[in-house]
Amino acid sequence: MALVEVRNLVKHFERGGGLLRAKTVVKAVDDVSFSVEEGETFALVGESGSGKSTTGRCMLRLVEPTSGEVRFRGENVLGFSSARMRAARRDMQMVFQDPYSSLNPRMRAFTIVEEPLVIHGIGTRTGRRSRVADLFQLVGLDPAHLDRYPHEFSGGQRQRIGLARALALNPSFIIADEPVSALDVSIQAQVINLLMDLQEQLKLTYLFIAHDLRLVRHISSRVAVMYLGRIVEMGKTAEIFENAQHAYTKALLSAVPAPDPDAPRARIELDPALVNHDAPLRRIAEGHFAAV
Image (cartoon, rainbow, N blue to C red):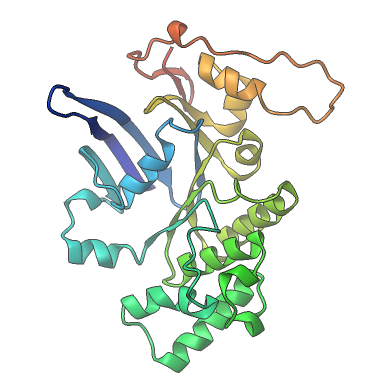
């Protein structure tokens, strides 16, 4: 059963405009639909500007969508009142891309992770201290460092603090927005493995947003590829890697480094003029769809 369903999601931004100039409309998310099954990791991939992060933010209403539906356990999140949305965020959390800017540099690590508990009125001060210490251990941090400031932690440790904050309210659904792209390659694998371990341990469901297809291959069961605000291909991860149909997906895959550095590589350059942006998704194989 689908835990989350996104139906015909649209987000348009207006920009420019003035005395003698008309405003232009940017279609950041343009009629996007997909579902995320309970317990799975569904990946949303594409280059910067493809609309994937805006999609994630619209799902949690950190950015208000222009139209569409986001259903969580059958209820349309976009119709929630502010009070109902606040309660729903206990179940739906986000881990942000940049651990350097997503943590308040003036707050100690304990206060950062405790903050969601305070906002939702959960526990006593002593109880919250114990809960935060447990969360630190859960994400592989030393509780002895609770009173340190963010600048006293490495990048990977900061991202773990962000993850601990997201887990504080025991959510069932986490949107991980490029959670390792700001980290050194040597640290990325550690954080990815932690996410996978936590998923199994806590029965989490992930929407994993990324531009690096190497990461997606190891963590996700299904993938949707976004290009200029639309999903152009979607299917099981192995199927997408082995039988890509859309020109944009093929170009992305051609940019993935080969395990053998001496192996011949044919980098595919996408010609946007050859992409029919209005083509609907059609069935290629069981569970595999492409806008071709």
